[in-house]
Image 1 (tube, helix red, strand yellow):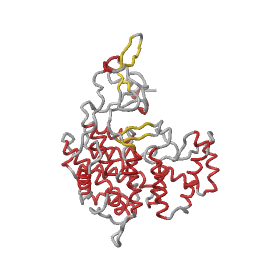
Image 2 (cartoon, one colour; image 1 turned 30 degrees about the vertical axis):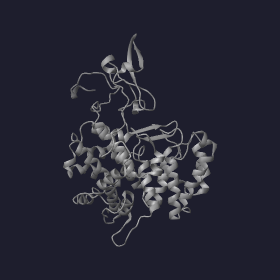
Image 3 (cartoon, one colour; image 1 turned 90 degrees about the vertical axis):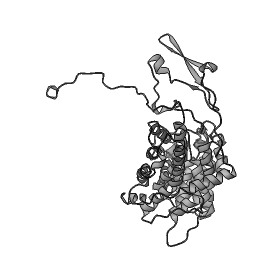
Image 4 (cartoon, one colour; image 1 turned 135 degrees about the vertical axis):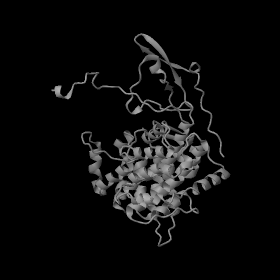
Length: 444
């Protein structure tokens, strides 16, 4: 149906490449240096333990490549994000989310015929098994939508037995399509359940993002038509969150998948990881900060607190752990944010006024500019999602919806990698040395 991924560099023969020399107790070991298409070279330590009896210590794996991948490349120093070689701003500004899905899954942007086929396959899988409706009733009405997502997505394997055989490439592809197609329906149902409204079924005549908005905001008693500006903004949000290399949730999906777990269970594990406030909750944190500031006249007070290194307060939504320059996704998200605010006439909303003034200060104030604390994607996406009508509890759900394609593409790539083994990180043990068991009546 689509083209094969580009050929990877040949790293099979270490003798063809540079090598790093490691000296231990006067003995030297050669470690092969591998080369990617772009980015830094990598010292291959996979044989280190067998050769030396030692292993590396790297909390958080910040200096460790857990795999090789053809999907996504990030250069944080220069603010670059590529999906299979395509800059994220071009994909978000010119393409659609389903085009990006096709690119991540199959390696190439689709032709007209391929796109029509792919879109049809996704559309035909948007409904969920009718018995799944009853699952939602088992949750408390005030359950967090992410708790519902973890449970419902994990349960998909109980309903779709014909796409859980990970050794069958056809079943892997069906699982991928099902996941991309059903995630908006599952997310919209979680939203509707949380606000006490009836579920709205997907419509085959709508595109991916417009369909999601109607499932979230339509009601049976009147006709709903998604504003094209809002649907386009939703589509861009999905594109900008589609994949982001080996982040915590993606690594979780790969680690779960390395054991042979079915794809639905692996994606559920990724959702659970994403739920952590240090990962997927950043846009919610940014909006909560704006609410804490409250009014424009209080901004100088909070800006001064942010500059005070002795004050624990931090401006959320500024700067990024990976991007030491401007977040390349933020520029597109900024554009969509302002388009949505204009379309909805919300420029006078107090919280959004705080956001716009804070944005202006951050882009002009020497302190923020010198430290490269630019507004990031979480800053703009939080404002946009609030304007679209989503409560903060849904923000991470929407992140999970968008990231599903990245997770499933990463999972498939891992399954198809002949070098992949079950994940088994090592540890530096710092507990007690071996000691003798003492009977309970003899313990002091």
